[in-house]
Image 1 (tube, helix red, strand yellow):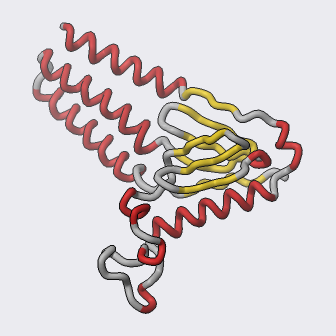
Image 2 (tube, one colour; image 1 turned 180 degrees about the vertical axis):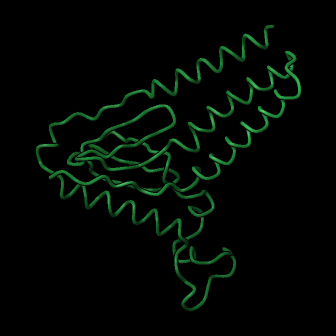
Image 3 (tube, one colour; image 1 turned 60 degrees about the vertical axis):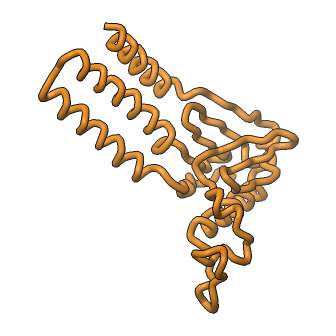
Length: 194
């Protein structure tokens, strides 16, 4: 049974990453408009490298289901796991997917260290010292999101086509992103050596 594309919301990153990348582009444009000395070119090359890394770590990561595969899109790799092979899904500091004895990690969806340290009975509270009272004892949005992600992936795995058990887990490098990073690094090194 082919599943429609399901995109799980990320814990942090895309908005902050986009704002940071736009800020870096503005800073580079303003500095290059006023001065094109070697120091300014080095500064702009450094901003370019930083922008590529920010895109890779803040904007790119995703956890999604496409057809009969769970995709863990990490900064420099894409791991495709057949849903029928998914054994256990845990969302802790990151998303951990177990296939037999192997563990695969997706960095897009996770809980903060503070949230992991707070007992589940107190997670609805803003303070770990004073538990919340009454109807305010709802879990925080991140906890709801993590639990929903675990549940939905598990349900999709249970309902997956049994023929997927024979399909391999694949991991490929994000070649276009690595090429852009390589070009940015070479440009920065050349400018710093100049």
